[in-house]
Image (cartoon, rainbow, N blue to C red):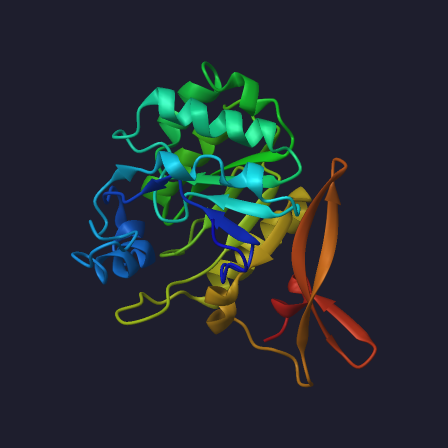
Length: 265
């Protein structure tokens, strides 16, 4: 487990699985693959095998040993619902999440069909837990929007979307049953551009649907900050008695949230 994650919408990461394979355009510049492949062949390194898929059962108990409550991104370096991960192992991961219920878990997948099937079956006990959040990645209309429908049809207590990297204008998004939306773009060499209007449109749709909205640092290139000395601070948005962390920026005595940011032109 890694505390103090640089991912803005979580506190820590937990990787009982490592490695993955590409399935859609959002995978093209995978940060996890880039990181892992740097260490391929390094003896004793956690990524000695690069980004090859492998189970890491010795990491299963980490959340039970972490006493301080955290928001934990599960498998930041993999996809829990990859076809190479056995159902039995996924159930073991879910049992740990249910037992260590002082944490909040964020599970994100591009394999929404398999997640839906398991949440209706062997993971039903985990789907009922409000401290376990289930999400799908959305990068474009063709691949991303169908995942939202599969997520909505999954019996989860909390559902979220990670719309990153946002690769095109998504148009209307069916947000019924969705609790939280994260938006971000790519960074680094070869990053594909993201238009500010795409983000503003998503923000407006979330506003109308009363869905919590979070724009991460990858979306910063699509924004213009108002003048002033701006710093980040946590803001809690309540939705159906559940709390979601969103950033606010303040200058002097004035408070702005993400919604105001995207009104700046």
